[in-house]
Image 1 (cartoon, rainbow, N blue to C red):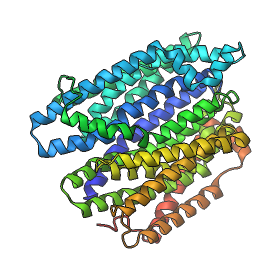
Image 2: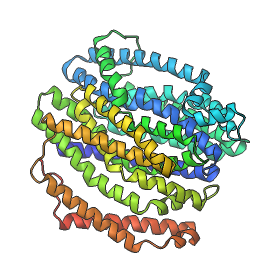
Image 3: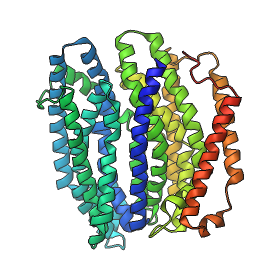
Image 4: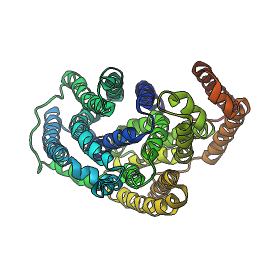
Length: 516
C-alpha cells in the first residue's frame, strides 16, 4: 500500500515542483516589475478573489465532496452510470459557476468594496488611496473569468485523479505560471499600467489550463456533454457534502481574505508583503502537504468503500508520518532562511531590501504554522473520504472565529505581521480539532513508535537548523554580494541543510514505514 502511495506522491510532487518553481519565477518577474507598491497590492488583491472562490467551487470543497462519490460510482457501478454522474455534475456546477462569474464581472465594484473596504472608504471620501479601489474594480473584470476556467479544470483533474492519472492535474498549473510570466515580460511593459497585462495573463492562463486537460479526458473515455442534474441522486449527495465543506476545507483561504480585508486599512505594501511571504509558504505546502492529501483521498475513499478500517487507519497514518517527515524540515528551513530567500528571489528592480525585510517578518509568522497547514490538508481527508463533512465545518468555523479574534489581538500591536500570526494559530487550532476527533473515532491510531518517530525527526530538523545557521553569512553580505553569488550561497545552504537532515535521519534510524 505505502509503496503505491509513495509512487503516486512522488509523481504529484514532481509535477507540483515544476509548477512551484515556475510560480517562483512568476513572482520574481512580478516583483521586479512592480515591487510591493500600490499597483502590486491591487493586482494581488484582484488575483486573490477568484482564487478564493476557486477553492470553494473547484479544488477545495468540491474535490473533497466529489472524489469520494465518484470513487464509489467508479468501483461499484457501470461506466454509463459514472459518465452520467460526471455529465450532470459538470452541467450543474457549470451553470452555478457561470452565474457567479457573470455576477462577479458585472458587479466588480461591489466585490472590490466588500473585500477592499479600506480602499473603498478612501475613494468615497476622496482620499489619497481611492485610486486603488477604482483599479481593483477594473482588474477584477479581467481576472474573475479565471474562476470559470479553473472550475472545469479542477473537475477534470478530480476525475483523472480518481482513475489514478495524477500527473496531468498536478502539471496543469504550469500553464498559468507560463501565461503570467509571458504577460509580464512581453505585454505588461508595453502598457502604461503594467498590472493590466498581468491580469490578462491570469485570464489566458485559466483558459489554457482548461483546454489542456480535455484530450486526456477524451482518451480516458470520460469527456461528456454537461447536463443539468440538480436532483440527480449523485449530484444531491455531492451537493449535500459540498455545502458544509465550503467552510471546512477553505478556512485558510477565508482567513487569508480576512487578512486582505484588514490589510486594506494598513500601510501601502502590507498586502504585497503578505503575498510574497505566502508564496514561499505555498511552495512546500503544495509540494508536500497538498500532494500527499491529493494522493491519499482516493485511497482512503477506496478503503472506506471496501470496508477496510485497518487499512484506512494505516493509510491515514502514512499520510501523517510523511507530512511530519517532509513538513518539519521545510518549516524549520523557512524560519532559518526567511530573509535570505526573499532577498535572493525578489530583491531586484522595484523590490527593495526593505521590502524583503518586511516580507520576512510575515514569513516568520506564516512559516511557524506550515506543519499545521499541512496537517489540516491531510487530516481533513480522514473525514471527507468517509463522506463526513459536517464535523470538519464545525472545526473550521471555530478556527475561523478564532482567527477573527486573534486578528484583532495581534494586528493592533504588530500590523500585517499580526495577521499572519493569527492565521498560523488558527491553523493549529483547526489541525488539533481534526486530529483529536479522528482519534476519538478510532480512525487515527497511535501505532507503536509514533512518539519516538516524531522525536527523532524533530532532532534531525534541529541538527539541520544548527548547520544552516553556522554557514549563513551576516546580513550585510546579502546586501552587497552580487545576485549570482547570493543564489549560489542560498543553494549551498539548502544543500547543507538537506544533507545534514538526511544524515541525522540515518544515524537516528528513523523508520518511515513503521506501520507496514
